[in-house]
Image (cartoon, rainbow, N blue to C red; front, side, top):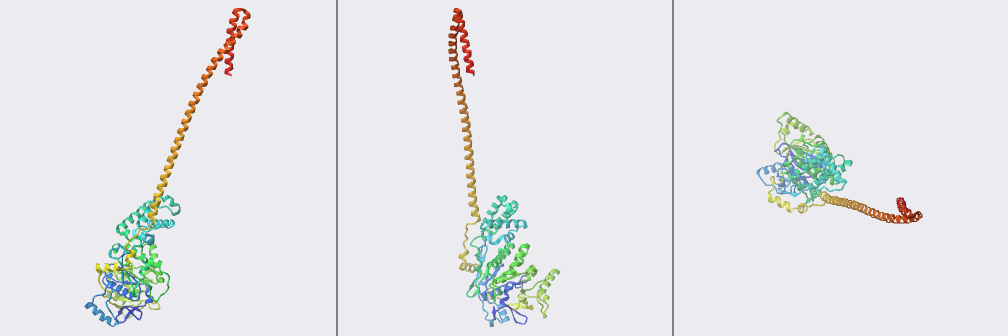
Length: 531
């Protein structure tokens, strides 16, 4: 509700309104209290008042009863007493529903909400996957490789394909990125498969949420964006990390606006203790940075939890607006926790804050909001106004009608699978295999050609040797024939000469001369041929 352009949340003990200054609403806040003390009603009343001012709101519906805000509240005797107690009838109180947009990362109880692996980033994804420091570092290296090689990581199959590629080519990447452990890659891949089993193949993909769609109004009222978390809360890391991603998206997307008269958006972080459970130093630093700087983007963040000590001091110090419902102290540790919660408020001399917190009933709280000067107001014991919306859960029929009636339903309903790392690496694998096949074929052809050439060379050598031997045999035959002819001729000539010489000595001399002449002639011919 709005009076004099201030946010009316409760009345104090004196029946005076307790206001929050709209210009201080982006200084963040804390809503704490034990189970059953009225935190959910406080969230609803705050969301209604912000919506009335035209400020969009984000809320997580952990118990399934926030979605009922789409419908008007139902009158009852108890509600009439509360309306009378706060004088709401004079303020124009009416039951009414508020404009809501229902979202669900599983696409069952709301408009399908997706993000991409790249947008989630290695730091948040490592937390979802439950990786240790070494594995987280390896995941960061894989993301860096994707950036350097301009590979889009849209869904989990993209990331698995890249992990497999990096593992197979680890030696090629080692010089630039360091040693990449195959065992760590295997652990990350198995964690992704486990996430897919839990629905990761649904909420990583396209079309991814355009966070600007949350900054909407309907007939002047801010739209209340409600994320169904009734199933999501079963995985505390997945729940808290997804909410942190949404907050980070707002931080990274929205421009700097400085101090505004009222916020551009309010983000309620319910079950905030889950965010800070087993958190790494790097992630805590990221949260501190986002909370510190997002106020300059016009966004107010309100952490809702049971125990204010669930929130680290470095974060809680940045929460200027505080609504503390009742706490219970059964042990010395509990008493110390309540004392710390009480000491966080600016003291009111009219009551003891510690005792008051211990004795607060349902719907009661101690409240301190920042004044116009930014100074925390004195703590006031207060009674939270009743919501104007339905207190229970929305029916399945109401939920379905609201989902399919939204103009955003058609935008996000159907998943698309764009060309990304998986497809690129698949093509690269086919091309590399073809290139390797062609290289192997070329090498085989070259080897076959070399073998054939060698065989031909050997055959030629064999043929040449055979021809040489045949020629040698022919030459020998010719020499032999020549020798025989020469010997005959030489013998005939020598004989005739010897006869001519020996004829002077009679018939005997002629015969002897012929024989000697033939023998000498054949000897001389043989000697000539040898030379």
